[in-house]
Image: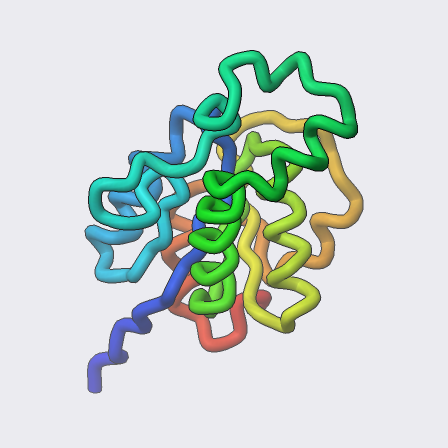
Length: 153
């Protein structure tokens, strides 16, 4: 008897600077998984960027930054990502990534959802990655982990 392929609802957490992210999202979708892509959260939506609020966002002081979190664009971007995190049964942290992706990965651990970390290249070691259900070094390992009932096995 053939084993039924498991289809996961995946939140792909990474960085805008991670050039591998689009190809990984495509590969996961080609495998039949449902994948949230922060770069294209909804049809016609190019994803949130601080530059939507202010081209000089990198010069903000803490007070301006805190205020910008209440901007309509920030609230829309957060809502898209938060709803997708709640929807997903699996978080995939694609390294290298930044602060937001790491907070998102922490959500999956705290919510008792599955977390897979994909490390395709050398990164700074991090002890807390031990919280992940599975740490993968290749996309083949990611795809195998997604098919396991117990991701960490």
